[in-house]
Length: 294
Image (tube, rainbow, N blue to C red):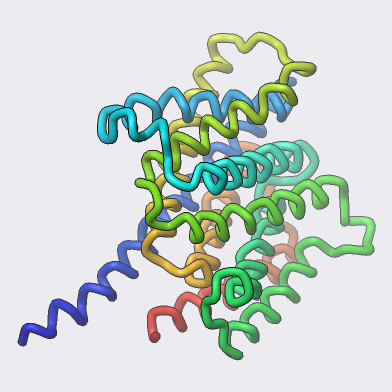
C-alpha cells in the first residue's frame, strides 16, 4: 500500500505543471493587446518593452526580498539568468514590433514554431529522449507553420519576420528555463529576468523615449502584472516538466489572442491560419499526451 503515493506523486507533479504552464500562456496575450493598443496610440515598441520590464522589477523586488532576503540579489548561475532575461526580453519586444504589422492571432500563431524547435532540439541540447512519435508531431506542426507564415508569398510581411525572430528568442527562453530549473526559486528568476530586461532595453529605448502619460503608466502597470504572473507560472512549471513536454503549452495563447483580437481590434484569423494552427496544435497536444504516458 505504501507504493501508492510514490506512484501518484509524479503524476500529480506533471498535472500541476501542465495547469500552471497552460494558465501562464493564456495570460500572455492580454499584455500583447495592451502593447498593441499603446503602439496604435503612438508609443514605440522599444519604450513599451522597457516599461514592461521595469514594472516587473517593481513587482518582484519587494516580493523576492521578503521571501529570500539579500540572497535574491545574488542568484546562482548568474550568466544563465542573464541569458534567460535577454532571450525573453528579445521575444517580447519583437512581438510588440510584429503586432504593429499583423493581427494578434497571426503573430501568436507564428510563435508556435518555437515549441516545435524545442521538441526537435531538446534531445541534442538537454539530453532528453525524443522518439519517432515526437518527431512525427514536429513534422506535422512544421507543415502547419508553413500554412500560417506562407514564406515566399505576398502574405509574408515584415511582421512575419518579427514574429519568427520572436519565436527563435522564445526557443532560447524555454531551453534556458529548463536548463536553469531548480537552480533558483522562480521568484528570484523572475526578478532577474526583469532586471536584465530593463537594463538591456534602456539604451535601445532612450533614442525613442517620450514621457508616459498617467494612462500609459497604468497600462504599463497592468501589462507588467499580467506578464509577471504569466511568466512566473511558466518558470514554475519548467521546474516540473521536461522542455519537450512544455513545448505545446504556448498553443493556449491562441485562445486569448483570438478573443482579444476580435473583440478589441476586430481582427480574425484567415482560414489558412486556422488550418495551420490545427496542425500545429494537434502535433503539440500529441507530444503532451505522449509525455503523460511515459
